[in-house]
Length: 182
Ligand SMILES: CC(C)(COP(=O)(O)OP(=O)(O)OC[C@H]1O[C@@H](n2cnc3c(N)ncnc32)[C@H](O)[C@@H]1OP(=O)(O)O)[C@@H](O)C(=O)NCCC(=O)NCCS
Image (cartoon, rainbow, N blue to C red; front, side, top):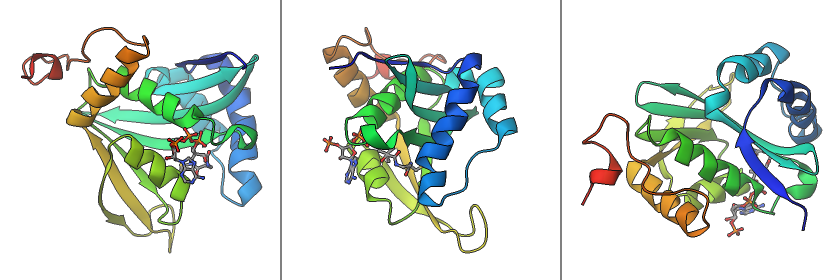
């Protein structure tokens, strides 16, 4: 099996992310992220974005932004030939473990008919919380789902069993943190 590394985004990942946008989204007729957006993620938001690397090339990525006590996960993509090999779930677990000290929830939007993404969100303990109409343009209806703090600890438990994180993933502010929870 090829060695797969899940790690935070770096400035030099820009070109590979743009390539993956084409491979994952353009190929199925979806619009792709612009260069300015991707460059901003690479330069200013690398702590809330993760990539999966295999044999020296990127095979998956997740981009998110933190505001106050919540994170908004805007983009998740896996190279077509590696879909179904758990890249996405590994990326999201790593992202959530990294964000857990800073936020109490992570939310996603997804098209109602995107079974793969919806199953993935469910596997991570996400709850559907409603719809947003015209989200990325007229007629674009998105289901909003949210992963909240209790699910974070289940994810951390899984990562601990795999030896990928140590200890609890506490909130930095102290007593609201799951480390102190009974
Ligand atoms: C959605 C996407 C990111 C999933 O990535 P992935 O690496 O294939 O997913 P994983 O292999 O980590 O699967 C994790 C879980 O998701 C579910 N899942 C994944 N692909 C699925 C599919 N095609 N149908 C149903 N469930 C699926 C399964 O529950 C799976 O758990 P299991 O392995 O125990 O069965 C990937 O299909 C993709 O890049 N799609 C195109 C872009 C997209 O739609 N992005 C999301 C919206 S921004």
